[in-house]
Image 1 (spheres, helix red, strand yellow):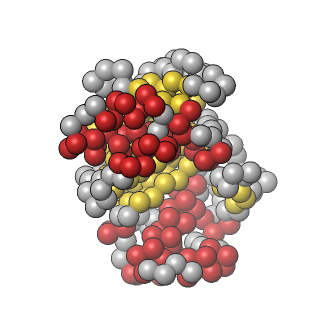
Image 2: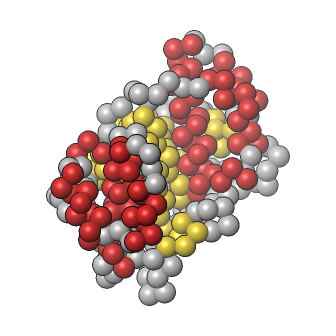
Length: 257
């Protein structure tokens, strides 16, 4: 059954909970031959294992919304590399995927443009020097005005929100990151401002922690002024789900151009 139009479903899978036995089942029952070949190319075992988990998560979760077995999903790639469902008999499902060391996140909706990004802020130090090349002047000024310790956290806030937005637009890095700004209007709200880009509206943003140590940003375009409801679950394919209640750090209720 498809998600209701006013809901976004988030599926979180932790690498550490995926056993070798489950990985073998995923490879045998879920993945295509092409995916098995792609996964074997990764140099490190942890990357090979996460690739298998990622593909199994996508396939098994999509099968919750349509009468298509996990192994029978077909995928293509758009102009900027974004995957899409290629099954001719599949219903209209929008999905987006992100992963970082330790966690995979899948966002699913009923055809709304959406993007998700996740970062592990416990094992990775923020590359603050990147801000000068990829953040807008407004963001750089706001970032550098903070104490150094706070800059680490704020960098990941900017980075995940901007990544989620360009993924929702399906344009990847062809959409210049420095030509729009994520603005923190108050203690719990976030907005987007466009500079040299065509104006756009109707964007909803969330910045949240659903699993300890991981920061997740979600971006959805919707004509409704009321933000969609988030439904989050932690799961591994072939194991029971756990309902999550993400800690929402920042949210926008309506993004005006």
